[in-house]
Image (cartoon, rainbow, N blue to C red; front, side, top):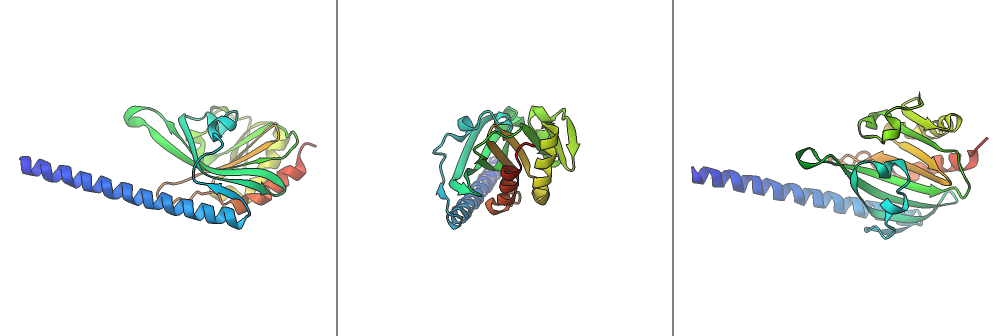
Length: 209
């Protein structure tokens, strides 16, 4: 009996060690890929959060989800004529055995002028969306929308080419936030920085009517 228990124990331990080793390799590869993409686009990069991202953007809807927010893999500089920061963001939802960690790829840009307040959240991610979109003002395409209705439609139209990436977006003051959920298995939902340039340019140029 003790031999059987020992075999099971060491089997589970070996599996856990292999799992965390694979996850470490996946994260290391992601950091290398994001650093390379940042350098190619003329952005500076740090694997650590040098800007206290959860506090810096704490008034935006994504940052209000769950608890224990953290950021890493931070790129910063200018894109589409605007100051930008791109980073990986994660938070925890629930507690104890029901606790889950949610991972997002995020880009925040400064339009340097006030934009109408709008939040559009992709329906694929509505289960874990901010409280504000649990009772949306309307739906446009694959997004639940709250805030300025006309500008939410413009924001959804600008994001339409990124709909398959599950992108959600928010404007608050001069800030534009784009986020896409990262699937831990294959990082398939990572939001490429290059794909966001068109959205940033469209929103910056459009602004209020």
